[in-house]
Image (cartoon, rainbow, N blue to C red):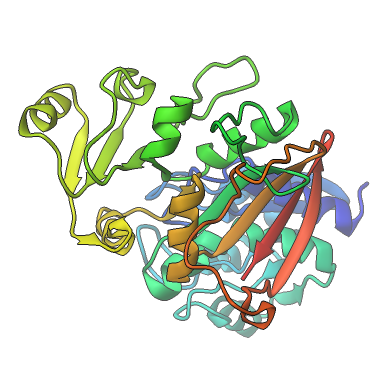
Length: 366
């Protein structure tokens, strides 16, 4: 027999197992408990298929009668691609629900709970703050998408303890440790798009794929977008020759080069020029219109500076390694226009720290 904490933790684990696989739906986990035993466990399936609650109820069968459900997100009450989960819960005979957080969808927020309570089902909101925060992080991109229609943008970089992302010669492999790099692969896996600047492609020749600990590509890969104002990308670049999805966003490019890139399946899109080269806002709009929900910015410093200046970063993930690079010409993480006074600095509304091997990561929300 487990505790209520154990049951909700199992629901969170179920949600984490599908994190990045369910868009535009949020990743949700559900657990059904009867007489102290887990009789049903479910997670959100791909769009158009069963939600977590329905998966758990199907597994539990008749054992749902009089049972309790632990679910990470308020069950839906409206018809979408599937019927409302609350109707299935009511008809199943479940007597009590423990819900981690409300659905941030303005059309749903609280409606599912009201319908459940009106049917006589007891509903309890979860009060363990650390677990609530875990669930909120799982659905942060869903919340941004459903409330604004815009993609959720994460800026990620790794730096030395003295604030450098590369040496004066542009070398950056490897600042962060192995565990940090494994986390970056998980971040890519959960993202629809990874954006880098052309200088990063030229200096590092990255793959920008999501790989497992053995270096094998995972089953889902992000679209790789290269911000390349003048179409300078070398044709031998790895991300042009590995069969993955790649888009070059540029202002100008030689016609023959564009024709060649398109002939090998590389997308090329031209956007307006601004003072920074490629108009990044225009690129973000193009991606939004393509149905992109999550964007991971991997730099370098010019792209990071531009995106910070635009004020559209939703989340910072900063890996700090216990090394010193030094040098006045070494490269810092964020260029851009900068500020004159500390009082003008971008401040986080909330932040927390995680440890990855010898590195620490600061996760902050401006």
